[in-house]
Length: 233
Image 1 (cartoon, rainbow, N blue to C red):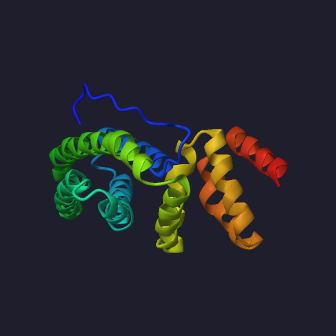
Image 2: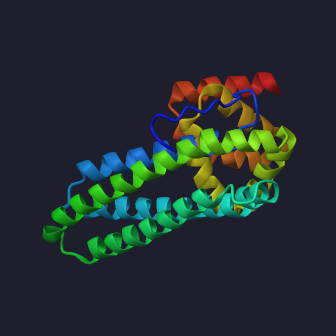
């Protein structure tokens, strides 16, 4: 998609990209800022950042696989060839992930005094990946989403997203919730958590709130969400 392309998206229609992409953008941006400010001599900070970057690579891989398996497969049934450019981007992302993982392993193995130029190189490489990924997500949220709206009803799109959610094991789902919740606006948080509260056993929902929601929000944001959930009950 070029910078001058304008695509109308009906924001009243179902959007299966919005919340996960918000979460990925926020989490990636935070990692980029941490990379830029990291002290290479601080063993704990470097280890924590390497671990968080590895988790982000894992989550990025899972997100691409979800789109390939559940969205692109359905799209191809109604518009053959429509997902080819997206698939090419996903292949590029996988090459990025392999390279980033290699850089992380070398940083782990290096002496603290050797890490400064390696972390600088990782910072530049990661921001290059991030720029490409942001552009890719914009294409999905404009061109691809517009095509999905033409080819699928909202209930069909909701069902696709439901199959994606159902395929994620609980531990990894908690990680996705942790990056999505602080990136959402209040209405989006209420919509997602209200649906989860209505569908889940009370202990399961309480665990998600305690481990994946409340710790990720400022106290004022959590208080507002708690009140909204109580009113919606």
